[in-house]
Length: 305
View (spheres, rainbow, N blue to C red):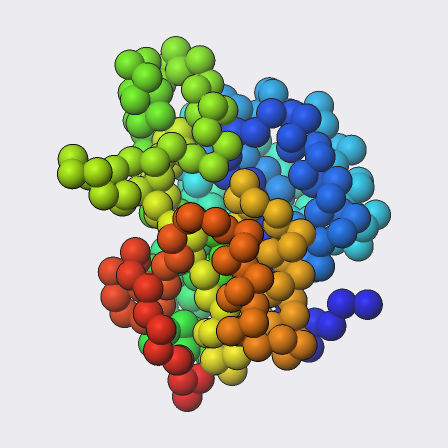
């Protein structure tokens, strides 16, 4: 039995356009092996991708639930079409727990228990209170939140507070598809080229410095957010759920490492060695939480007070 006293691990929605086979295999392993309590499931970036895998959704969800995972259905981070809003409405009306990632679907989930995703900016107590009155039972804070913000919001919240602790940091979602443009294609005729980059497309500066990662219409950090040393302090601040974002690495091993740190089975330093073997050359980042630029890496400790 997984110990959740020291915080719950969650797996965020898959952001990348993987093949149906890769997606099925990934979630099968998560269902059977990963030490996570909740799995967020659904397309967040581009609704054009949904037909590729929707026939598998029911079976994947059933397997996740059979593996003891709470399944939360994620919505798009940017809704631009009536059918996208209608899909969010149908999810909410079906009675499942929904993660709202765009304010456009807040009306659809209002009055029903739901999760506020990290794409809806919650940086102050007023926003937090309004969302809780609307039925939010868990709020995932934006990756840009500093420790001071997390401390205030998590400590006063009457609902659960979640924070991303591993994976590329979601920075923006746009109307334009940069992935298509990089191949001299338009969004409407993209040929789903985002599927060629299962961990995103690197976007460097003109002098060759790694800066960002492109994923369809989404912009992510070039490196992985890694919060290990900070976990105990975040738990002390009142954070209840710690999110891992699926990357093209062994996420079962990543979850095992984070679970061990939360349970005080290994030290953050020991975990860092294990994680480094999994993430290879991808840089680590934690700047936002420490009040720095997001791509920075800060070694100093956090105080929970």
